[in-house]
Length: 256
Image (cartoon, rainbow, N blue to C red; front, side):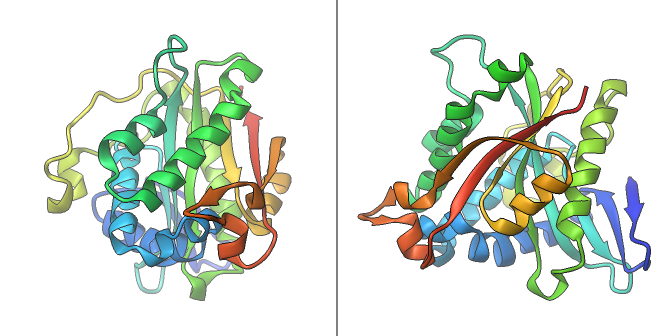
């Protein structure tokens, strides 16, 4: 499903599909896993196996049918992607959220586990479900653009259109992805029922100034701001590995 075409006609925004899934994974592998702050802070950028485990997380999120890609119209290549995840509030305090379960059960590498556990920790500190009194959200999980296509506003457009996807879910699914659509590398992944609840908020972890600017443009409210100097992986702070002081923001916006 096509959602938007840029004014200069150079890019179109589409729902993730079987055809665009390999290109979307390439964006995450080459752009997100190499350049994103927490990927650097946890050493994912230097661990190919950890990168593949994050791609499995993307594959799992793809099954929710709410992820988007930006396609260059001249070539048909995927040049940016937003892997989005429908998150449900746990029914009681003993139930673990999705990210914690994924880190425990499907991460063999300490670096990928550290990144996903960091995501789970920040989500837990904010507790958007309690704050906004909702039982489901759409999380803008992994957002990235290939280096040669940056500075074209694609991140902002992908996030804006993702919010539209979240709003439209009240009328039913907008796209469908199956395990078969993910290709042979993920053929053993368990099929699961789609999330039946409708998101009432969009949430995100903005881990760099460019994405924090996107949040401001789109009206996200920042509920938590943390320094990556405060998080340690294998004896070094995330900021030490990044090489500078970096702040991350947990933010959300109501879509009701």
